[in-house]
Length: 430
Image (cartoon, rainbow, N blue to C red; front, side, top):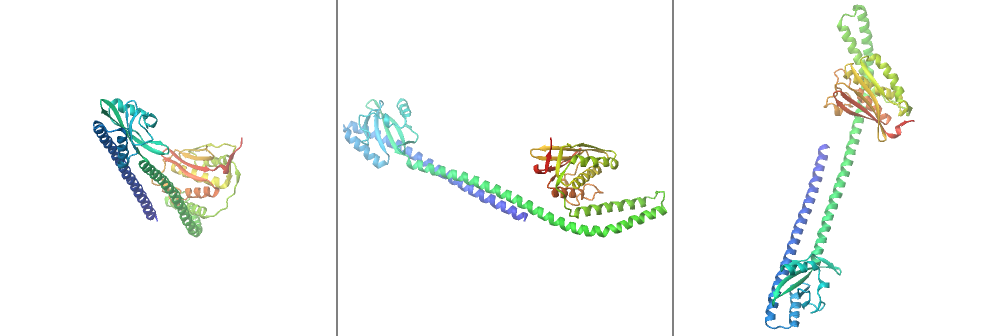
């Protein structure tokens, strides 16, 4: 299943990369072709202006009349496909024109697309191309080409319709915008699929874990019930034999036998506690009061462990009080065992947003990083004598109360377990 998911994401990534690469390459080729066509159009405009300048000079030497030159310019517009050709002087007075809209003797200023570029072309004596400008719903572009005629400066204005290029640019921009939107949508879909996949995996993992725990619980409960009576018989028999043959308690084998039987008995108790389905109460209780009584009893069990309790008396949790005490007992027992009965345990509360965090922190040796991801799994223990069920029971009880348990820190000197309680499951009176 994991390989299938990996292949699925690889295919998605390859398809997305191929689509984006193909679209980007198409845009690049299209933009390059558009740029080349525009450059070719400008070269044609410049070549036409040069040709017109030479032909006008030739016609003027042959004393051609103005009407003939106007007709010739109109014919050149039809032949070349440009919008209009107008010849003006440096004062912007029209001398010849291909269109009757702009008549000879008129001031060309109202028809100039860019008066600043026109003046620069006259002053510098070199051609200038204007940017495409929208006029009357269409886009036009002009070339201002200055030349000398009879000792005076004349300017040939070649104007072309930029509708094709503008339409092509709009198409290109639309395709680019569509590509961006496609990337955004693809990213959103990928993120959504990732979230759905993550939740599906988490749900599948929880379902698999619940099935395993249920099977383990049933099997363990049956085994524990079968072991409990023989262990009790072995323990009582060992005590009788020791009382008869070792009243001074000097023989170590009897001690080993008694200790191992007690360890097995604790393991059986943990298995029964883990496998037992118990209905928990959901009612307010004071965690401070529950912990105070328990901490007092811990002083007798672990005289060299200092417990610091920083829980407000006004704090109330919604859940099962006995289950909370069992959670605290398992956490503190694990901490004391890790510190070998010497150290410090701090229990404190912290409010983060709308959640309450109850932290159990010790200054023990920490937890092996290799064990940290699976520390709440059954039979996972960093202690040689541990059953590996304490933290599994803690998690099961927390989940049954609607709380979450996390391993906040596992570094040496700062091992911390954090119980996260949501907003509706705690309150703090003033």
